[in-house]
Length: 212
Image (cartoon, rainbow, N blue to C red; front, side):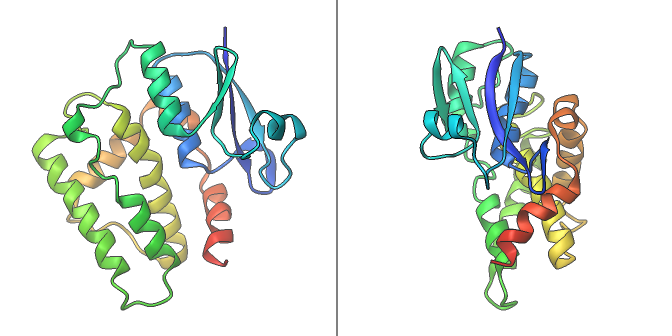
């Protein structure tokens, strides 16, 4: 039986999948594990009543497992790993926090209006640390095989690439070759292509935050 999952609908296009890296992370997990699912697109600016009833916090992703609605991508991914252990996507404990500060650093730099506040350098430091890690352990974070940490990081790096390219004309430095190879590898996976959103929806989603 297909699992029911609620994900963000695109800004200005409620019938299309929206730009939420946390929703994509869960969709990637379902795709990689070949778990059938039924997707509900939720317009977050006009949430349907049934959605608010089962999920008063109104957050996505939200998934129904064993007749219970569960939110928070960390929790969802943990449950899916337990319930559908094959193929395993478990990340070895020593690698689970690799790249974990990149998203926060990216958002800070994206919203920054002050070129001297250090936010660009902080992001570069995080990306350099990821590059060094991939050089030693790659092509994926835990080696030859994709794991949960990659499915979390991939969508965030996609958002970083598009949003910084659009709003700041900024790109990941060419010399971080391992990061570039890593993003190419993840973005070209069948699961990523299938669950990905067009660039214009990513730009539209971030425009609201950048101009806030």
